[in-house]
Length: 559
Ligand code: GLC
Image 1 (tube, rainbow, N blue to C red):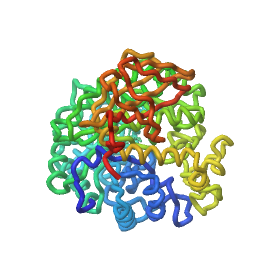
Image 2: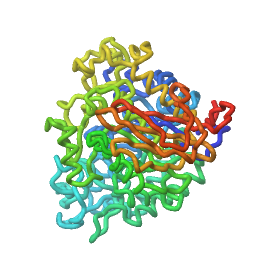
Image 3: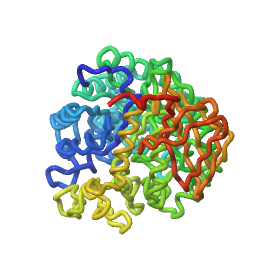
Image 4: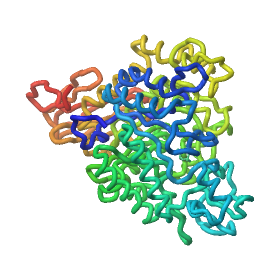
């Protein structure tokens, strides 16, 4: 935790950056990224302007689910370094004013975890009850299967235990039994262990599934909320200023419930919004975005959504209708290899056909709708993917640092890399890399950097401001006003492939002047008549509205 700062609500103003230590930077030449590597790249992240890093799981693990299958909660995977390396890395981040949260996988462990090994071998072992066993595979039939491409049931027969065990994800990830108080106590200890070593909070994995109960779909049970409230009480008391971010891939009502009465999670991902941004641009229609944002508001004032375009998983299509899912597959996953389970395993740039204007448009939406933006490593340079790698590995390839061997990620032989680097000509690391892009003023990297700066300059109004949609305009345009105290930001997006002309009723601001914030260009003053905009395809404007006779001070939150 960082001392001497206003700890309150820092996450509401933060830009987050998600990264896998494994694929970020290899400092010792073994082909796998590590904590010393991440430490060395902290300057890049601070230059980019991010406020908080989210580390994907780095604990010891057989890596059957890329580390979401933990075999020891109290250690760092030896490929990535040691607990001391982790701590040094967090200290380096803190020195630069960057916070660090980490994935916490509480629902399940690896089948290699000694707890499971003990449990399966002996019915009388106290560990037995740490997992969920049954003599049949017929219990909890209402629970859906999540990894539909690989798992046929949430039960798997264990020939050593001579019983079935319960798992919501891969069969190599037995679920822990949260009805057992020792499991809950142990998890509190895990949380304390890492917060004592400097973490600023957790991205809590798979939160809806902790408890199972017959006759329910085994998601979002009251006991699950109760447990997280206990976790929250503990961290508020022992580690004030640290946060909990929920991965609850749920519809708005169920997702919102994780904020509790400001006594549960500080943040939750906005899963329903994400696919609707893609639907809206493909359909050239703002309605999917507007409808869902309205459903996800209001939320308690000390809570916030974590909003994102892409992450380390497939672009999940669980929180859309069947019709919307078919549409998404048709638009964004023409090759069957692009599909996985209920989603699309592609990165942002390839999803958008590497169209710079669309990439910018989606980032601008991300930086202005309610919530804190979460960027996925590599998307800021427009990295490509590899749909021919298994599982979700195609979106987890090495970060492209430079045009050197292995994209500057590692000095190892190319064949020993944790994942091959991207060599598709459209996304080849020789051109798409952090070093080359940092030298090119017009690069995507420099553009994203400038947008992060603007977002931070105006983070109260852009981030925390109330949103009000303009609904009497052409459906191809997304227009809203954000208001925070006396600051106003007008955001106008053309979601269409064609130019659009708009007339906005801004008469309540008659006499005020819109000032475009990327360039500080002053537009003609607003009058009583409709205000006209012509917008080229996939373009956007952010205007701060300045009152008549303004002294030119920009109403920003400082800097
Ligand atoms: C979450 C993670 C995903 C993982 C799963 C099981 O959904 O984001 O990567 O496979 O949980 O832990």
